[in-house]
Image (cartoon, helix red, strand yellow):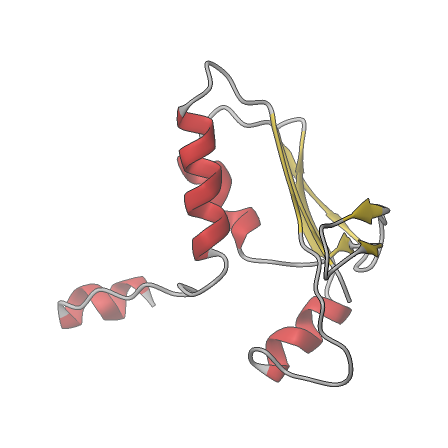
Length: 126
């Protein structure tokens, strides 16, 4: 939609919200404090239970069915959704969970503004 926005003289900020916005800002803030950054691993936990839709149902379905991009050693690869499970202990009330790889737009944005990062992954609890 870049050309349409440019021709209409408007700015479109896609996906700005709790995330990828928040994680992008935190990753950039932290990386600016370091001399070098090789890897970024984002792991989310959730305390929700039951069937809820915290964002667009279509996005949830895409995350569950589409392969997920991962930046590894400077190259993008695609992995199966729900793979690479990370047994993770979060603070109360979230507790211990098993987040897995899912597709998320932050994998397209983080390497664009943190230039030297070689590996970026995104895990989320389901």
